[in-house]
Length: 416
Image (cartoon, rainbow, N blue to C red):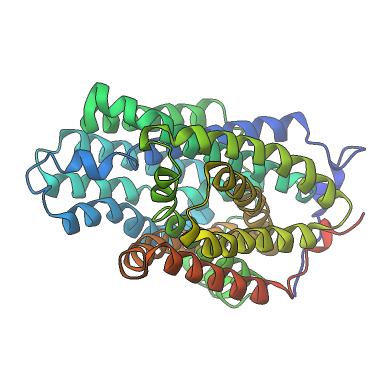
C-alpha cells in the first residue's frame, strides 16, 4: 500500500517530542472541533423529537413523508460532499466552510418558518447542502503533522460524540419549551456562531498544495478512487455509521423494556460516551506512539462486532439496564477510536493536493451509511425484530474486519 512520510516542512518544524501538539496545532484542533461541535449539535438536537413534532404540521400524519423529510439531509450531504471537498482543494477551505455554514443556517431558517411538512423537507434538504465535513477535516489535516493528527481528529470525534449524547438530553426539554420551530432557529444561530469561529479563531490555511485547474481536480479524484487503502477506509466509515444508525432502531425499545423511560435515555448515553472517551484517550494515543495504530484500529472494529453479537444473543432475553449500559460503553470505545483514527488515516494516505477529494469521498460514504443504516435498520426492525437488526450488524462488522485486516498504518505512524 502506498504510504506517505512527513513532508520536509513538517520535519523542519517538528518539536523535540513529536507526539506533542504545538500551540498552533492545539489552537487549530480546538477551533475546528468547536466548529464541528456547533454544527453537529445543530444537526443532532432535532433528531430525538423530529418525528413527534413534525406530526403536528399539515401533512405530518404521513409517516413516510416525515421519514423522507428527516432523511433528505443525509441525501443532499451525500451528493455534495465530493463537490465541496474538491472545491475546498481548489478555492480554499475557509470559503467553502463559511458558504456551507451559511447554507445550513438558511435551511434552519426555512425549517423554523415552515408552515407544512413540504417546506420542512425543503429546509432539511438545504441544511444538508452545507456539506462541509470534508472541508473541515481536510483543513485540520493541513494544519497538523502526521504524528499528532489522530489526536486532533480525536478532538473532533469527541466533540461529535458529546454533542450526540447532549442532544438526547436537551432535545425533549427544548421541544417542550420552544417547539420544533424554536429548535431549528437555535440550529441556525449555532451555524452563525460556527462561522465566527472559522473567520476569527481558526488559523490561516496553507495554500501551497492547491490544484491549478479542473483537470488536476479530476486527476485527484481518480487517484483517490483507485487507492486500495482509501477504499478500505471508505467501506469502514460506511459500515460504522450504518451500524450506528441501525442500532438505534432497536436500542431505545430495549432500554424501555429494561425499565428506563424514554425521557431518561440520555442518562445512559451521556455517561457511556464520556467514560468511553477517557478509555479511548488512554489507550489509542499510547498505542499510536508505540507504532501499534493498526492493532488499535482492528481491535476497535472487533469491539463493535462483539457488541453487535452480544446484543443479537441477548435480544430475546430482555437484558437489564446495567448490561445494556456496559455494552453501549464498549461500543462507544470502538466507535470513538474509529472516529478518530479513520479520518486521520485518510488524510495521511491521500496526497496533500487531494485531501479534500479523499475526505469528500470518505464523508459521502459516511452520509450514505447514515441513510442505509436508518432505512435498512428500520425495515429489519419491522420485519425481523431486534434480532434481525443485530444479526445484520454483526455480519456487516465481520465483513469490515476481514476487508480491513490487510491494512497497514502509514510510515509516519510506525514506531519512530
